[in-house]
Length: 125
Image (cartoon, rainbow, N blue to C red; front, side):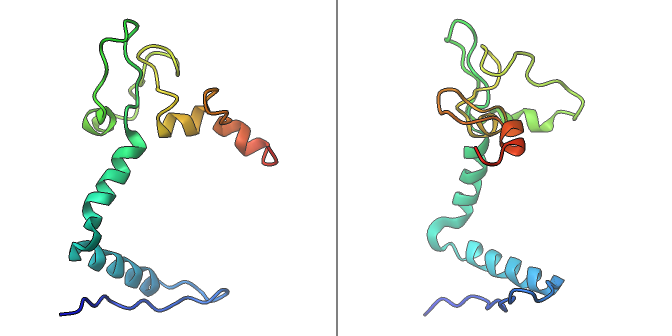
């Protein structure tokens, strides 16, 4: 039995984007995820985990490491007015500048990546 998925009407450049186009696209994505083909549900969850993995550095002794999924397990449940983390980026117990999200916002000398403010104000670099 062959697999069939919903077709999505192609939106041509210059055509107005209607809500039915977005709904058709969402239905097509969801049908492919629900099919189990290619294990898409796991891949979506793993994609979110990889963006927030190992968000903080270990303590100063480098013996106590936070959980790999600490941001998804704990920090996403805090109110918006809570300061996180209390240490500076790159310091012990501060943001891990090699992790994807802090690396994008603060930059990293180890990867020669500029911080977000520099990238937005100096687009030629």
